Amino acid sequence: MAIKPGLQFDNSSGEVIGKPTLKNSGDKDSDEYASHALVFMLAGVTTRWKQTIGYHFTGNTYSATEANEIILSILKKAHSIKLDVCAII
Image 1 (cartoon, rainbow, N blue to C red):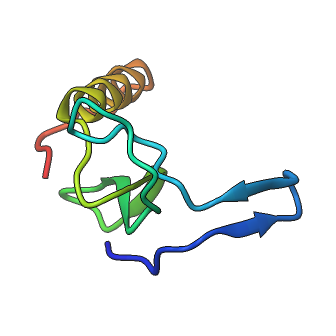
Image 2: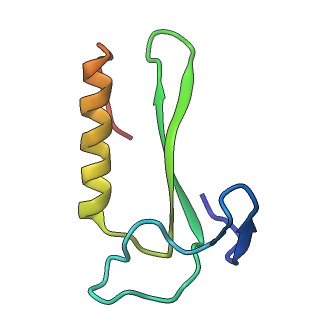
């Protein structure tokens, strides 16, 4: 999902947010602002429900290795509460 790049002050945490939370896919770190949100959701196949379970802010690119680790973590947690994951989209 595309978002408007820029910095914002978060009053609740007292931090400035707007930088990517996932590493860039390149070798060097960049000073770019986050321009996309990567949202992780679980949803029912035979019943109608969906739940956002996490998100990360990214630049134009992000590390596939780091995203893979997040997905594997989500799969392990879903399995631990007896959810069967049928597909990853």
